[in-house]
Image (cartoon, rainbow, N blue to C red; front, side, top):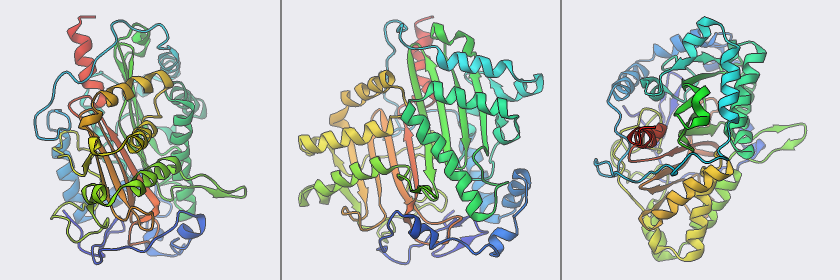
Length: 441
């Protein structure tokens, strides 16, 4: 299932392991524009003008991708267990408030009810799923569909698309909505750069509603899902808690440039904090934290570098993966470093509204001494890098990637993928939904 070095498989996956070190590529508009494909490149011309369905059918013909889809389908059909560090789910890590807080807010459920009221019977049938439906786990992040779940935003009328954005605004923090909508805009930007607006645009995403949002104010579980190229969110509200996981957010390029200049990179704060933490490590700490000296280190074991996921381990269809801890345990960091690590985690959790983010951070704090930090690459920012924060209640990843629609065959800091998971069974809030049912509410 791995690509060979420097192999570009049907214009979709590109990896290289021919070197143990990469040249630094700065995150600027000039750097990514250096790698723009010629408009007449066959990779673009052969799919230009295709609808999203025609493009998906085209991708399905790639032999490597057919094998990958079969593998992903097998993972999708496994019963949900949750990510673990050793194959055994730890119980009792996640708890609901004693009662539904009065300040939980009903805005997300009200926005969802309004949206559902706008739909035709056929659209309702497509968009609604039971809270326990397996379709939660059907999300993916390529620019073609693996599974068709929900309604495709780009084919909806403007008022219905706007209503979905109202649900996103009501469910996410203001900064979180700005980041998610920014990633969607960057997808449209990439479609314009490549001349493929019918393949990649700001609304080439699938949206679903799970459960009954009209009961959300009483604390009954419901949620929504949004997924497509570089954006995948799973939001659940249950018993006064919000869970947003799994999350996949990325960008190629991970910044916008227009007549106003170059904008803040999509993950600029996260990157700065992580580099500050990595740069603060002592030689002894660095020897523990740096698992591989390069994101393409030849010392990586067979299978560690995946042709679709590259280094990240918690992406689509990885709901049951066993991911051992690696790197340096947080109890070997000093107080300032532990504070930086917590700030990195808080940035991963900033999609949550403030009160909900504090509840998630409290869970992280309760297991801070069981948290591990790992790094691949140079710690001074001179190379592309990967890092992971891993605790019993959180896995957060950041990974610089090679080009897909840009031509860089080596990872570069302008193509970024990030993931967020809640291990030990609380992706899609499944552990909290089980607690809700145990209370008999």
